[in-house]
Length: 163
Length: 294
Ligand SMILES: Cc1cc2nc3c(=O)[nH]c(=O)nc-3n(C[C@H](O)[C@H](O)[C@H](O)COP(=O)(O)OP(=O)(O)OC[C@H]3O[C@@H](n4cnc5c(N)ncnc54)[C@H](O)[C@@H]3O)c2cc1C
Ligand code: FES
Ligand code: FES
Image (tube, rainbow over all chains, first blue to last red; front, side):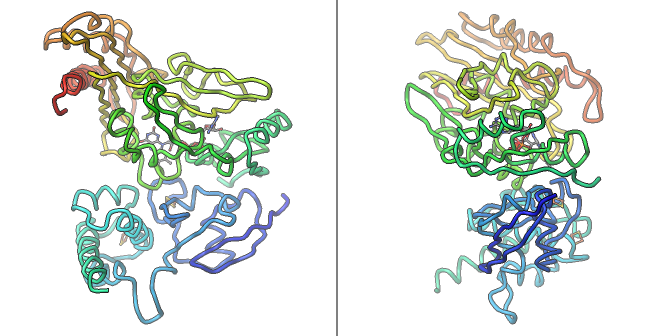
């Protein structure tokens, strides 16, 4: 199968890669770019472990052909922290609220939370739960994740006011 | 299972899409969100050698509304965008509801209404509300364009009247007149992420005296295809609906259904729920048509 040259823009960095047209974005992110924060759970759109943001909306990278991401703007979990010392407020809140157990679902959960708060900075508990409808967690029972996102929303709103 | 091999084409115009469909006629599929197609391909159920992506075609994601003309949903418009459009929420609440609760956030951001219809699952969530609103598809092929009424579109599970060289350029939904009300309700075993076990959509338009001028009712997940319920519609048209008439129309919806037992629900449960949901859908549509809040 002839490879296709594509340009991926991930977390502001440009990558030129040659990929087979049948490869999924999640595999290219993990195997070719070494960005292994994005996980694969089900590989069929059910679990959300592979969630990334493309052109401003959350998508399942296990159901997206890498060639379809050519020159699109991508954000993965590696792109959230502002510096190696400082986590993104959503990540910080997950740590503080004990919202991480095995951690396998966490990158996808955080990306879905980011998509939610980007579109709805003050979600109700119900809206947070709906925003996570595409993310499965086998460990936490969800409550701590929901609390963490609610707290992160509050913090981000007050620091936006100050700033 | 490993993904089969194929080539991906990313045309920028509808003309190029149609050329590619013609050139690779023997083994080609259109690709939008891929949320149905890529899963089928990975399972080996479909093995096209060529995929023609609609995601870079100019203008195909547009959603527009104009009074008198109604709503036009582009052939690559995302489900989440349709669900967020102000006019869809105000005038076509049944469609807005389907587009806000089906599948998951990510799948709604990727999947399209056109893909949902062409995939033709009996449970396709946008089908019942679009049938209730009297929608049509605009299908284009090289040298031709035709309008297909959605009620004539589905021929079986996964089957439609669309020809291999055709693509859906847009979905057209007629404008809604004053004193109209509509609603879509769905039930599924595992909240919304699971596909619907039963879905009922309704549309009512009343005259100044409160008589029904036009009624459309549609069901999902209870037959090999999404379907309309003409007998139930005729029970209501020309009448002033009350509780008894609504129960009769709902019973006619149950008669129109041909449900099966499967892992999501039994046929008997589905029949019982068609009765309940049809009554709720008609009651809410009537309240909305009368100007009350649903
Ligand atoms: C986890 C998950 C949950 C889901 N839940 C639901 C649910 O609750 N309810 C529901 O109804 N569906 C559900 N689906 C199914 C699917 O997401 C929808 O049917 C979606 O609308 C398909 O759109 P798409 O753009 O992804 O289609 P694609 O997969 O890109 O295409 C589907 C078919 O339509 C054809 N096609 C696409 N666009 C056009 C066009 N413009 N003209 C002609 N042919 C075209 C393709 O060739 C293909 O045959 C779910 C899927 C997943 C993975
Ligand atoms: S790995 Fe993509 S949704 Fe599960
Ligand atoms: S923390 Fe283990 S799956 Fe969510």
